[in-house]
Image 1 (cartoon, one colour):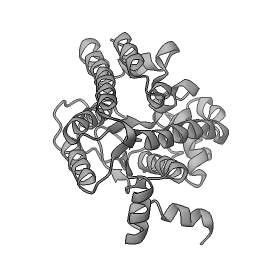
Image 2 (cartoon, helix red, strand yellow):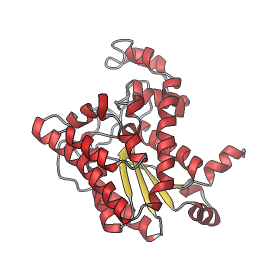
Image 3 (tube, rainbow, N blue to C red):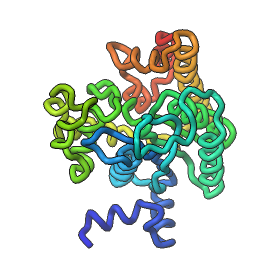
Image 4 (cartoon, helix red, strand yellow):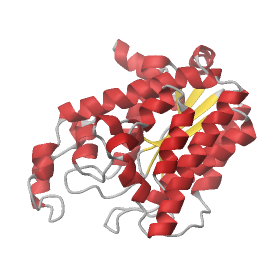
Length: 294
């Protein structure tokens, strides 16, 4: 086994020996929880894209700063009405009986084990998935008195051009960098949806994916270091900022009938700085940005 593989083994929870777990925990008591689902992502991408992507980003961040990466969770809200897709809960249903308690139980267990912060990274981000993940993270932060961040990966890199998509230029570029063995661009030509023009085949690239990856991983790794150090006042400011963004997402959906109102407004102009402001702990500015999305 080469050095890189040894390093990966020593931060992935399920591959650790107990002494490796203890050593990684002592270095940085932070846990990453990657989320995804099994869902059709065009003829050119693998079905497990969301979890594979989120897990790999968490592993790369932990390699850089420390922490322990939990195995990825497959299953979420919504999903394409296509073959090979498992829809655990409906996207349009405000009720949530599976994802929320599942995440809550993990958070309770992580806190019981002594972790000082939790980063939940969802690679699947239907609107309701985003809402439930962030809402749960806010509530668990308040209940457990440790910071819990719930975020889709694209929100950490909007200011470098990654606004999130479904098997489009962004996700395909990430996979071309993170898992090139799982991308078959030649298959897109037979896809009536994604192959109807040359936008993706000409726009997606491993170089673009590398730029997005570097931004996401750098910010995740910095958050992993600073979040366990937050005092009560900082945690309260973080919660207020995250709740303001959550309110914008929920009200945008309810008031306009469009699930993606806040998401679309964040992707443009002065509203795309969430990832940068989060790492720099500019929580008042995050609140102000969220209020402009309403």
